[in-house]
Structures are given as C-alpha cells and as structure tokens.
Amino acid sequence: MKRYQDYAAFLLRIALAAGFMSAISSRLGFWGNYSSGWESFLAYAEKVNSFAPKNCIPTIAITSTIAESLMALLLLVGYLTRLASIGAAILTLLFAFAMTYSFGVKDPLDYSVFVFAMGAFLLATMENYKWSLDEISMKNKNN
Image (cartoon, rainbow, N blue to C red; front, side):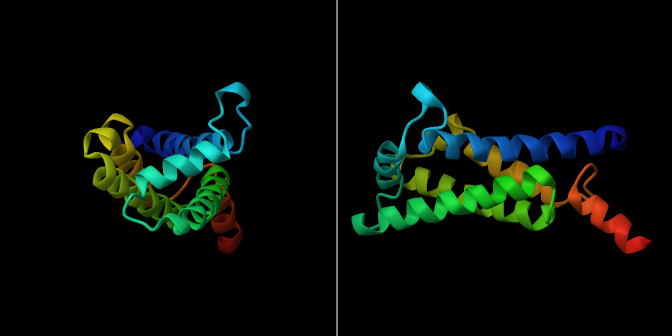
C-alpha cells in the first residue's frame, strides 16, 4: 500500500490547491461566464454566515479569500505543506460548520466539504512530501 502513497499525497495536495484556486477564480471572475463574481460571493457568504452581523460579511469574505489563496499557493508548490494542510483543514471545517448551521448538514455533505477538510487533515499526517519545495528544502539541509 505504501507503494502508491507518494503519488496519492502529491495528487491530494494538487487537488486541494485546485479546489481553492477554482473557488477563488470564480469569485474574482476568472472563469468567465462560469464565474459567480464577487457580489454573488458576498451574498452567499452572508447566507453561509447567517449567524454573523451583516457588516462583518465583507471582512469574512476578504479574509477567507486571502486565506484560501495562501493555502492554494502553499499546497500547489508544496511549501510548509503540513502547516498549509492543517490550515486548509481548519478553514474548510469552519466553512462546513457554518454551512451546517445555516443550511443543515445536507449541503456540506452534497458539496463534499467534510471530505475536503478530512483530505487536508490526512495530507498533514504524511511523513514527507515528494515533488515539493519541502522535499528540496530537506535535501538541502541534509547536505
């Protein structure tokens, strides 16, 4: 089973980064006609965070976009992968809990938000990260 673990960890890292990048690209309009756009994202963020005061929504939206961008970049290049994976898991789990509170458990299950979060937690448990800046950094330390 360990034979394919390096491939699985690499592909999981890339899939998590791509998931974050797709969401960010949509809200920033980079998907063209398929984009949700920033205003739609703000409206959705307000629905998801129904427990938060309305004046906090722009801050939540900007903060989550910055955090998702950082996690996507770190995961994509494989730098500080364990820390980025934990951050991605916590961020996504908070999103899942907010969705559950606001819409019920069906929506986060339908959109695999819990799976995304647990995948990120699983990635954080890997001993090393092949094909990453972390691996290059470790090789340089050992020389």
